Length: 184
Image (cartoon, rainbow, N blue to C red):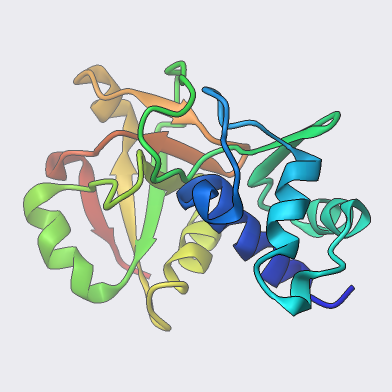
């Protein structure tokens, strides 16, 4: 394989979550695309991707603990994280009573006033534990902060939560009264 699993995952995220047209892809209403079409689209992006194969894809999926993608037969889709509006439908579910969100320290002041917003995605991403939230926050800052979400109270107030996978929950937004700064 000429590209790492991490690079492959990032490129697939770009193709399936954000800019499928760049790869010549057309996602169906639930975000699915034929695997062969995805691989063909990836191969056209640069010479380094010319030999990417289904075996590379399957290795990447098997080695990832995040379960960002769903493979079903000859189709694949991103489970969550889309910036493309209107993809898929989600069914609200009872979330754990407490969830977490990792972010850059500078974001806390804005979040205190407006709450958590999807910021160009369809949903706010929330973690089931502090370790996962910290790891997600490190993508934004080397010393992230972890915010605590009172999901039980938010649900009582009518905020819907949607399962993303076993580590991630989604919400359209989380008002500030349900978000607190969590001291390490």
